[in-house]
Structures are given as structure tokens and as C-alpha cells.
Image (cartoon, rainbow, N blue to C red; front, side, top):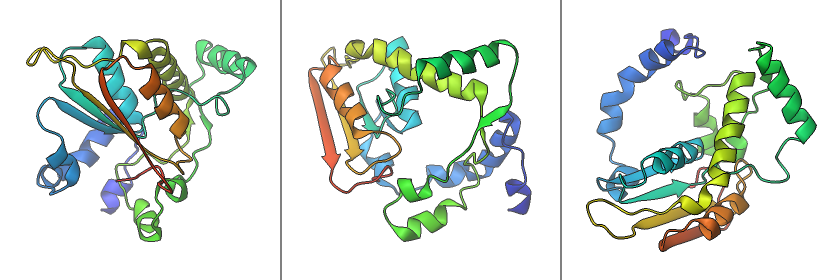
Length: 208
């Protein structure tokens, strides 16, 4: 475990080495996520929600539906950096600066409502806890901006069934990591015929 914890998570090969011992364990988990998502469905949380939506926009007919948990698909208005800041960090990137400029917050308190879960969060060896690199911040902003501009194209029509399929969005009302209003925006703008939004009172970021 010490060897795993000491790996430099900056590079993909190290992350793969860390993840590989846990693959068999994950596949054997008796967890609601693996039971509730049949073939053709995607279930992703937070940043994974952004990844799922990006994949859907590129391959719109490959999925029967999607379950999004607190998806990061738009930067909330009060969280978005000022235009001057965006221009400045973009300039820094263009001149080749790759430094870790953004301090990493301890999100355990914001993510989990239960104290016991917060204490366990520090033992997640595959979680990146270092400062965020400039390029990462720019790519996150680009991804969410791209999703926001195309949100009305989000509609699940499976090639297998040829009918509109389900879009299910789940979010905790007390989430301080991704704004519940972002999920409301997605629900209202997505063109899926069958869509559902569930907001859980007092729920934090990790509602599962």
C-alpha cells in the first residue's frame, strides 16, 4: 500500500499501475450502480457526467439512456471565473506554462454528508489530490462550455429500439461541489422526450 500511495499521479502509466490491482475487486462489487444500469446504459458522477455527455454528443445513437449523478455539465454563474481571468490563464497556457497553479481543496467535507465516509475518503489511493495543472483547468472549462452550447442536442435514441430513451438526472440539493441548478439547466434544455430530474433534499455531492 505504501508503494501504491507513493506513486506520482501526474502521469497516466502510474495511474494505470495503481488502478490495475483493483479491477477484479470492482467487477465483483455487489453495488446498486452495477445492478441498476443494464447494457447500453451509462452511469457517471460529477466529472464522469461531463465525459458521458461528450461521448453521447459524438455517438448519439450508441446508448439506450444515461443516468447522471451531480453532473459537471456547466459552470454555475457564480462559480465561473471572470472573462479577464480566463484570458489570462489561456495566455499563460499558450506561452507554454504547465505549472500546477490551482490549489486543491479537500472536498471530502463537501462530498459526503456522513462523517464516517469523510474519514474514509483520504484512503482513496486512486484519487488525485495534488494541485490542478493549468491545462487541466482549461480543458474542464472547454468541455463544460462545449456541452452547454450543445445541450439541446442531448437526446437518447437507441439504434436497437429506434425510440427515445431515458435521461435520468440525480442531484443533492445541498451539493457544494456541482450546483444543482446546473442539473436543472440540463433537464430543461435537453431534447430527450423521456427525462426525469430528482433533487434530494439535504443530499450532498455523493448521494450514492
